Length: 189
Image 1 (cartoon, helix red, strand yellow):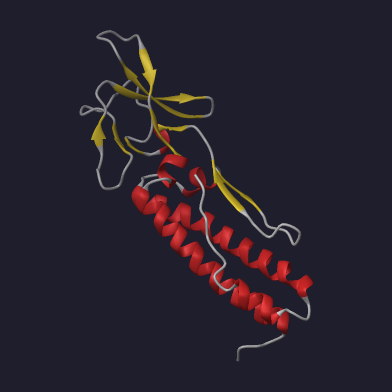
Image 2 (image 1 turned 30 degrees about the vertical axis):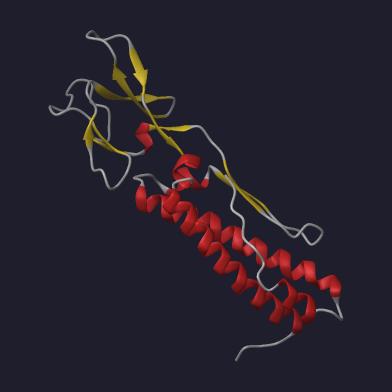
């Protein structure tokens, strides 16, 4: 998944800095880095509006390759595997092996869908965290671990990606203008 945003006012930057062309890439790299940081933050914000997941679980799966003056373009990448279902909203929130909930464990992945009962599902402590499993047969075994969507899948949701791209474009345009004024020593009072 990639986000592409264009520098709409590149000609304006080149014209304004025609006497000091070495500063063009400096202006662009600063603006692009701010837009990339904003995109990462907005990815987390928009995903959490639609999915019942913590910000840290999203931000850990998104990385930024920052722009430099020699290469004034940044990359915002999201990578990762499916997320443990226990990272989403669950009820009850702790394992109860001796007193399982009468209605069964409930899980909410998308906020628009509410809590849903997972038939024969159960929660266990596993390697310092929680894991959600489901019995697949009529007896105690076999079991399978249940997983939710991966962060790239959640970010790739059409409404999420379109909003993030739009906001990143606005931020880039605003920051190019700001960095240009900063470089030229123009103060907005």
